[in-house]
Image 1: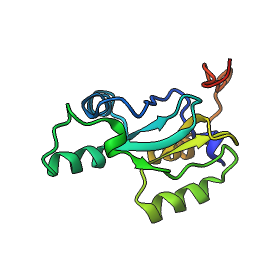
Image 2: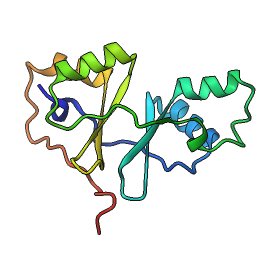
Image 3: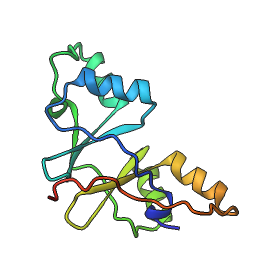
Image 4: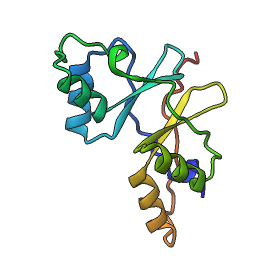
Length: 143
């Protein structure tokens, strides 16, 4: 099993000028582990997770005044779609990571793999989905 087998392709990503309150709202309302931050070409440049928001709150910062670029983790761990699940689990385990973006060679995001994605795929590996196909509905940065 590799990243492609487990990744979610219906993802939420944001630009670095989104407000921290917007990111917080999306994380909370949609039950997300984190939100990849992308540039204009769709390449991953950072990530914001709930702990980033909580740190800002702890430090007394006003989420309305913060931009994503102020709180995001720069250059997050990313993997390619052919990365083995065992390697992804090691990255998650050693780094305390909940979700890892899956990118193309040029850095454009095509999905994310979360801990729960891996568990779900592992639990479902004895079943077959007929007619299901993973597709990325929009290619960012490409005309």
